[in-house]
Each structure stands twice: as C-alpha cells, then as structure tokens.
Image 1 (tube, rainbow, N blue to C red):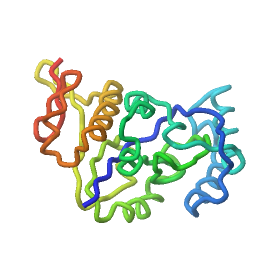
Image 2 (image 1 turned 45 degrees about the horizontal axis):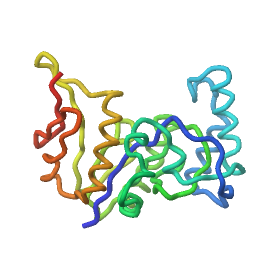
Image 3 (image 1 turned 90 degrees about the horizontal axis):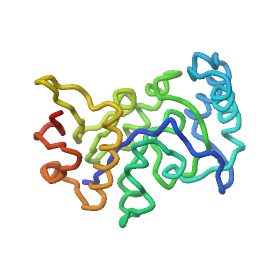
Length: 220
C-alpha cells in the first residue's frame, strides 16, 4: 500500500515565480475564486492595510500571475525545517508528500501554483474539497500531520494521526507553534530514512520528543 504524508500549507508564501500562469483550474477552485470576489475582504483575510492589499491583489491575479513549485511557494516554519533543497531523496518527498491547500485542494510538492491567500476554514473550503481529497487518498496509508482545520478536508480508511504534545507539571498540551518546527523535522526524517511503518516512529528522537505509541511527548 502506498504511503502518503499529509502536511498543511503555510500562510507565508514566496512572491513571484518563473513559470507560466495556470492554464486552467478545477471547478472547486473556480467556485472559490468567485466566492472570494463576493466576500468582505476584512472578514475573509483578517488583515489590515498593506497586508490586506497584498492578499486581495494576490487572489485577483491567481489566473494571471507567474507560478512556482508548491514546495518553493510555501515558506513557513514547517517548510524551513524540512529544508527541501538539502534533501538527499527529493524524488521520494515529491511522491509521498501532499499539501492541503484551501484554494487548490491536494497539492504535490512539484505542482506549479501562484501566490494566493485562503485559509481552509473560510468560504466552506474544507467541505468543498472533502470528497475530492478523500478519493485521492483511497488505497493509501496516510501519515497525518495536519492541524484541525485541514483535517476537516480529508477522510481516509487507513492511516495514523501524528501529534506533538508537551507535558508540564503533569498536564499535557499541544506543542502549538513549537510543534511546527518538529513536524517539519519529522517529515524530513521520514523521507530520508524511508519510514512508512509507525512501529519505527520510536527511532525519531529530536528536541526531546519520545514516541509513546500514540503520540510524540516531551516533558518540559
């Protein structure tokens, strides 16, 4: 059974691109672009001034702006930790990893995408993508590293949810922002070591996290 690693996109994205604009988009993407035009920008983006103007402009130019591979477009903490350019097994990463985008659904690392701005919990995007995304995950084993918002956009029959949890004074709490970096490191480790079976997760021991058989736990 093929293994797929699901990761979230990042809000931070690189500008520009060296590849041609998209020739076409899916019907779901097209409907979301229409909905974006009708939405209140301040409510949709939750941004102000220059950041708001940039988000509006990016979405207005989705069909005309230059593109770049998704793995280069996304620039957040998870992606910095993956450090794709230094991976020894880039082809394995490209085959196994899928990114859940609010605007484009399941995106492969090499897929060419423009700059855009749309969280998956806006405009019912997760619900719109659910069937399409889930069909693509049939007959696969999923290693799920998604936050709650992205989890609503997928269903799969076989897989495991991987969480990074902190334990302080006997109380457990999500790793939160700190967890983004370790997720990226974990994805890199999975690819570089060709890990597809959760029984081997116990061998990942970075930043003080230990696999309990159900989750990665760190005492703080």
